[in-house]
Length: 612
Image (cartoon, rainbow, N blue to C red; front, side, top):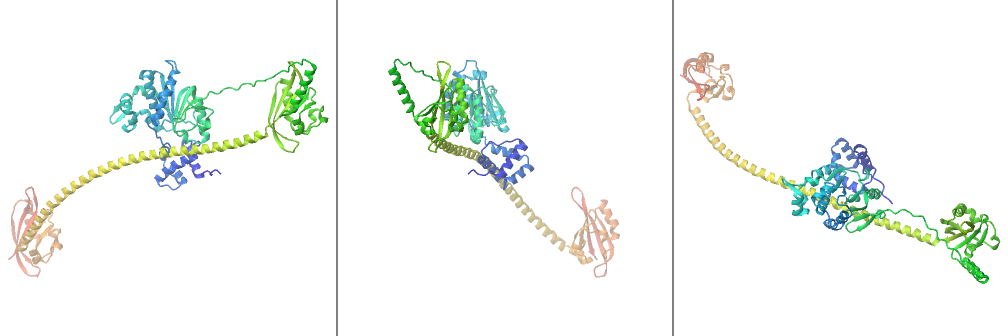
């Protein structure tokens, strides 16, 4: 029992076909589902339906999916021993069959990124010489993947890609370009890249060699048969087909004959037209004497009677003239039936095609036949007969009658049915084996592709690790610099703390009140003596405008002195005022004003106050 189709997956394929023209109808479903599931898992999507929604929202994902389905696993001289056989046995045959100036046409179908197409170019250039190759050889390299074709046209490969060629071929057919290798331009012009769909597009024709390796295994049985039929059309009568090691061509043995089954190289089979069947007629010799005539007649009768085939002879008028033992037994005929019209027999009425066959045989003076006719015999058993109708001709044209032979093929028919059944079972088993082999090869290519991705990821991780190590070293250097800066800051902080303590001790020890004003005359410093004089704490007066203070000191009377000092007209001003201290006692307060300067400019004022 066949597995039911996955409706959600089929909906996804239909969407790809209608929205982007990507028709995967002829591809094996198991392979497609496996590759699609790998892509879905990377995105963290749970089902085909969710992935379909994702495709509709993110159009750029179509390219990622297509690249996942097109594995593009290839290499120069992939399966080297097969290419060696092609070089030593097949290519010389192709060249030998050509005139010296006759063109040679090659096709690399499913070429991926072009390695196998350029491998063909190298082998034919080695066999012909570069000059002859450029004049005579055309290589058509096609694939379904536009990105792969573009890379093939560029013909730029890494050192790892060209490693299978060896140093000699690398130096002969490639130019160094930075860290990569570029295929020679004069040979590259002979390789024509293009997009081609093996299932739907017309094949390239008049080919001497068609190379399609590990591509057919992705197609189902029907599609493989269709593509191989196109390949048969594409090749010349003496053309060769070179396929991958997983592709057996089991379903198309009538189109291709094996040249080397181990390396999967096949030759095109030329179809032979049918010929007309030959008619073998023998004439009886004349009787020399009556006795001999009697003996011969008796011999003829005995031969006819003892024949292993049931026979009925009809005369010119359509009556039964003779019926041998097997015919009488099989169709229940007696002596009374001799002389009756054949048309009166029940056998004749049940075989309407027999009349037309007899008429055709007599009209055309040739034998006719009815194959695999079922007849119920006298023992009530239905048997299968091949019926041969032979006209009995006298001289060249006179019809004497018709011999109708019933050849019992029941046993052979049963054997044929068994044979057909066994053949079908064998083909089914072979197809299952082939499918398993192809799926194994596909899985192997998927693993190879995954391995390449892992190698790339590993290289990226190594690069990232190196960057992280560099960053770590930079951070360590920065950390050392920060530690050095921090130590310097700690030293300066200690110095500032010492200065602060020193200043604080000075301000505390100072017997005069002191306040420092900035250039806007806002209070920045207010020592303890000022608090004792006027009753306001430092936090109450900081950043307040000096003339907004409401204390016992008449600050307005200081405005003129402060302005004069602030303007720079005089660096020292002194004034004694009558004031009221924080206890309400009238006092005389001496006020000294001096500028607060740096080398560049004046920063504010210092007011010193003393109670007399």
